[in-house]
Length: 121
Image (cartoon, rainbow, N blue to C red; front, side, top):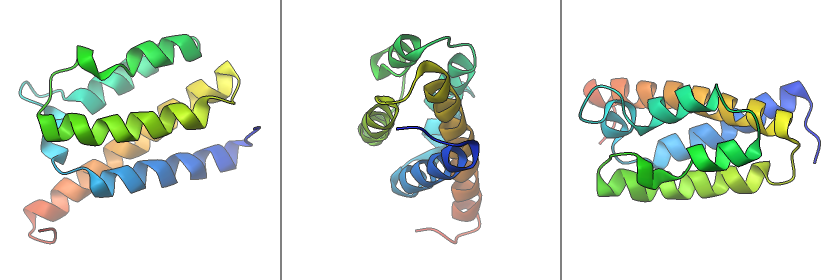
């Protein structure tokens, strides 16, 4: 499955937005207990990754600390992401994964802001 730049970006936005909507605790996912949650940690590591094997290692959630509900929500998200990159070459998979996590951060930060304003239950 070959993606052009624009469709990689659109696909990444779609995936990120979908899971940001369902994630129950954006505060925990973004900031955790120490100011840097699982989403930020994964994003930093993905930017250094060289191939799909490294991506798969980075996305193993047992190496990160988070609340149980965040782990459950992230597990579904990661599973979907891994399925999407399965057929891509290494470079496309890297680009796609970094984009997904970039948009995921934005979507979660926006959701958190809306929650703080009382716009989300």
